[in-house]
Length: 152
Image (cartoon, rainbow, N blue to C red; front, side, top):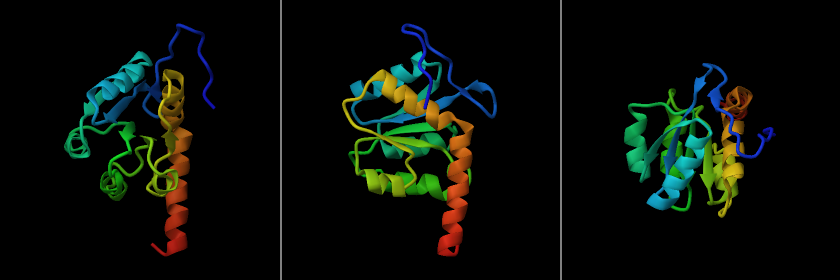
């Protein structure tokens, strides 16, 4: 669990492997919601790219590799999540989903699901967990074990 920072103070979120400011990608169709999510992450020190659709996010990922992705899962995120999972460069990027079917999202590799309405603290706590190198390493270990179980 992420430690709380004193009210009014924010801690720079860094990639623990590279020790630089982390990058996030926010995928949300509603521009107001997308802007609020991006602003919350920027307040915590993340570099944030914004996409209005999964198609736009897919194009952006061709040129950047975020350390965490926040998606609106009310549409059909599964082709996008499948593409992330299938590519060597993107399969370990942790994804946080807003809304959507919790079981299906977990099966698709989403590490955290937030229910709307959610607050700044809840979003940032999920992002901090996602950026923890141990979470990424554990996800890789689980993928290897799952592959061994199904014979991949």
